[in-house]
Structure formats: structure tokens, C-alpha cells
Image (tube, rainbow, N blue to C red; front, side):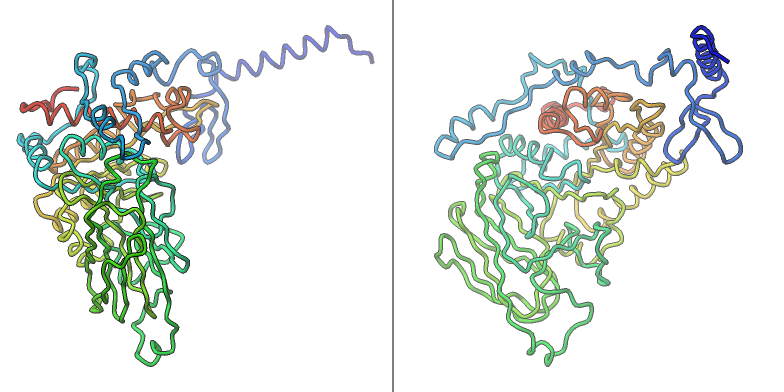
Length: 503
């Protein structure tokens, strides 16, 4: 039997028509999964993805945002360029960098403001007092969104020019990600252990310090070794080289107060400090097992400082702090994969002892993104918000007179019906976190709203302001979001009146 072309055409049209007709039977969100709901058919535990006619014909959109809307968001502020010149011309750079936001050029009504607790009308006033004090340390905890000193570095530079100060603050002995704020080069033998790292077994003592990570130059021992075993171990030499980064902001190169934070030192360890090959100081670390802060002082910022260590068993080194000793110091504590819910599981004594030494006046917490993919319903969101509340309360009990600011998650997308759409629960998560923070004397800044809200991430990706993972900011995007936060903060530092209702 010979099939005519017209018959083939009719058959194809019939099949296409039938498939198109099925779109009118498909239900929105019927093909449900743990993360999202696609259009389709569902029967008991079985589901098939299939577009509805509105999805296929693009009759409805996930967001009313347009490219022009996002461009308006990014043009509200003008971020500063990074300084990459040598100190010989820092005076010229400083003059440019001291320039504060020009409010004749900025429509402040479009700035997403920081929300403050209604039961503490003096919150912003307290921030101004702390920031303008002789010395103010800020600890910025966050997930991979701040990794590499992103966001933190920009804010640090801005505030150090406003209130003086210098240095990049906390730097791990063994950096595991690229950062340009200082040059830190550990020798061989060093190994890093992080309380938030799921790939490594946690130490039973849970003593990870205030930065929740540590580095060692010998293998960790769960049990204290006896003297006979110790004498049989070889002496191990390790070193840490510290220098100024020519790629960082100029203020970060101005550090003369260097701190080496350590604990769990139970056996003799020698320490020698050199600058440009000249011995500055030589000591023994305190071998009582407790937390200690070894101080190194230089008259000028070191260009080639080397810390040499020698011992049979390494202490736990919680990190370095590189500061100017006055003004603003901001520590960047990035925790890849973390959701901000592990603080209370760490050793409270060591954490409190280290916090008592650091004396942070402000703590910034930036979490939510890593937990979003695992939230299935509003109950999960409420549980997460409660866990965040408990973590903040735990930290508050181990610090004195510390103000807390929480930065909420960015917009985040998942593929739905072949398109990238905002997680359905993300707006609720943002709202719930804000409510929880404000009820517990914690200020809140919505990065989600600052980006433009629901559906903004896809447009930020198109503008190359965020990476194609639909999560992390590019360098250009980092500067914009950082300046948006700084401008919101500066408005409150500048203005004595409360503006909690301004959005």
C-alpha cells in the first residue's frame, strides 16, 4: 500500500493536535518533586511532566520584572573601583575613596533599607556609637556567597575610610580559597579542619574557635599522648609567611597588629617571628591546652613577615588577625555549604574565650541560600527560622553588648517547565527570617528585595552580575550588591531618625 504525502501530513497534524490538546488537560504543578512543581499529570505516586497551554504559549510569567527594572536597580548606586596602586600614591587614592555616596545622584526611595527591631528604637544609634568608637571589630559570618572576602572586603574598605582603621582582619593559616586581601603562604605539613566541612570527621572536643575552623602542622590525636610516645615523635618545623597584597584595597595593607590564635597546645612548641629576615621575637607557646592569643607587634606594616614554629605535636591554630589596632576591623568568615545552624554545636568554652579576646561589637550573619533547596513546605521554613533564632541566641550569650545584623538570601532559581524560576518558598523564607530577626533584636537586610525580588536572579545572570550557577555574584555584581548594602547602612549612620518603615 502506497502512502501519499498528504496522508503523512494529515497524520502529523493529527498527532500534533492531539499533543496540543493534552496541554489543556495538564495541570499546573501536578508533577510534584521535593524541590518544585512542574506542569503535568499525576496519579498516586506517579507523575509525568507535561506543559499546560499557558506555559507552552508563554501566556503567564513567573515575574513581572523586566531587564529595564534590573538595570534601574544596578544604576541606583555607583560602586567604587578596587585600588591597585602602590602606597606611594595612596594619598591620591584615599581622596577618591573617601567620597561618600552622592545623594544628589541617588534616589534614596529606591534603596532597600535595613529593617530594625520595633522594640529597640535606638538600634541604629547604637551602631553609630560602636562604629565611631576607638576600635570596632565586626565579624561577618556567611556561606560561600562571601567566600574570598567578597562583599566583606567592599564593606570593610568603605567603613575603614569613614571611621579609620586598616588591615583585612581574619585570615586562615591555610587558606582554601583565593582571596586578595593579604598574602598568606603556609609551608608544607599544614592541614585545615573546618567544623562546617562535611568531608572530614569532627573532632570530639569540638574546639574550633570563634571562626569555626583550624589548621595544624601535625596529625590530630583524639587522645592525649603520653611522654614516652611524644619523645619518639620527630620534631616538625612549619612556617607561615605574611605580606601585603598589591591587589587589595590600600587600607588593607596597613596592619601592624598581628594576632596568632591557638589552643589545644599541650606540649612544647617554639615560635620565632622574622621580618625581612630580622628576628623580631622568640617565645614558647603556652602549653596548657587552653585558648591563647599570641601577639606580634611591628612599627610598620610588614612586607615579608615569617612565623616559624617547631614542635612534635601541633596546637590547633584558629587563624591570624591582621589589624591596625584602631578603627574598623572586619573579619570575613566564609563557610562553604553552611546554613548558619552549627554554632551551638561547637565547644562553647573555647568559642566564648576567643570571643572575649576579639570583643566584636557587631556580628553580621548572611545565610539561607544553602538551606533553600531542602525546604519542602512552610513548616520546614518555620523550623529553619527557629534554628537561626537559637543560633543567634547562643552567640549572644557568649558575647557582650554585641549588635546583630542578618542579611537574607539572594533570589535563587530552579528549572521549572524548562525555565529558570524563583524557588516557590523563597519569598516566604525571606519574610519569615525577617520577622524572626526583628522579634529577637536583630536588624535585617533583604538581599532578595535589593536584587529586585522574585524573578530577579535570571535577569542578573543575563547582565553577567551573577554566575551561571544562578547563585553567586560575579565581581561586578558583588560590588553593586555590596554598595547597595553599604548605602542602606550609611543612610542610617548619617540620619539620626528611625527609618524602619522606609523601603
